[in-house]
Length: 469
Image (cartoon, rainbow, N blue to C red; front, side):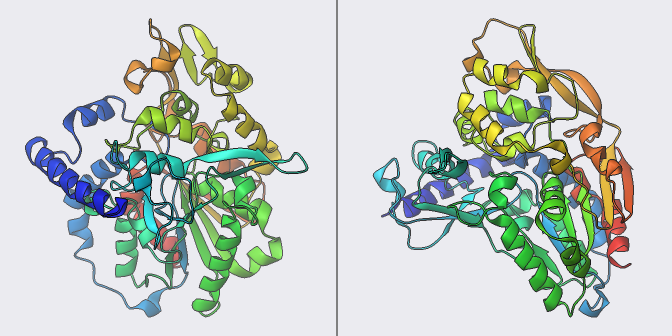
């Protein structure tokens, strides 16, 4: 019996345990973890399964009954094909191994077929598959013969790639279990399909390697990256598959700046004029998220109780997306540790103090000038985001613990701004400053949260109006 069969057996046991807990606590995940999450609901970096679960419950009880009454329209009614792009953690990822140097014999050094690695309960079982997952998901910063740095898989025998490219399975649901409890784009996809869209043809998903940054996404000759080449090909394929109709691109959270950088810096204006109808950033974290820096210290388990947050901190510390999602356009310190404040101007000192100097090297590697990072996409842009929700922009700890021992529950939100509960207005409103020849239309939605927007029926109808123009 190989590790995949063993882990599947353990997963069935895990499902049974969590099902019992769910029945007794009215929660999908263990009660203590849910309580911690609720007390720090917006202290997160990337997509969090607990928030997806909460928003899904609201959607299923309030919005879904209304949508079920809609009549299904014919596919011929579709005017604009649409590609959906998720945020950090918002793509289901697959993995394969060929002569990989795994940490345990049961991890399988060579796999007979690809398996889902993100987000997989089967690959995150403590003392069994968790070490295999951490090994496979870890990046290394290396230098080539010209002393030029580049990010690479820690193990060159491992390959990680998006699930169901061009279909919807890689963006509708991120987890391999509890899918109906933690949908991502599935409610929106369902709404659009009822309005004539066809999955895999006029409605497509682009799952990408969210661990990376623009330098890897723009490079094709590494063991990781090349996502922008794949996106360009998918857009062209979608254009021709739909009889030459220009394509709309929707990016949620980090998916917004992911697409903005692609449009501004990777493809030419003549190419955009031919293939792209509009860019729709939704709750887009153009200038990142303040919690991104705190995650380096305390980690995150993305709402999955079997993932060790501290272990994940070491993995996340080598993500190219962490510097990409670190705020630049504000002077507010993101964290206070016993009266010492750390912000944009002393990031090196922060990483030195928390013993993460390898992360500082990744920051230096991924650094690009602001005029490139925030360059206008120069296509018609519909910028959608929530406001009126208190959003933490500084986290504080004052106490006797050593830095290395700090956990999420030790921190207190100490400064706030307007925003969507996860991303501050300073980041969401970057789109308002795009200097371009095409229009920028801003739609602000009161009291709509960062994840809640992709479940919001008012947003669904607004989007449909855009697509039918």
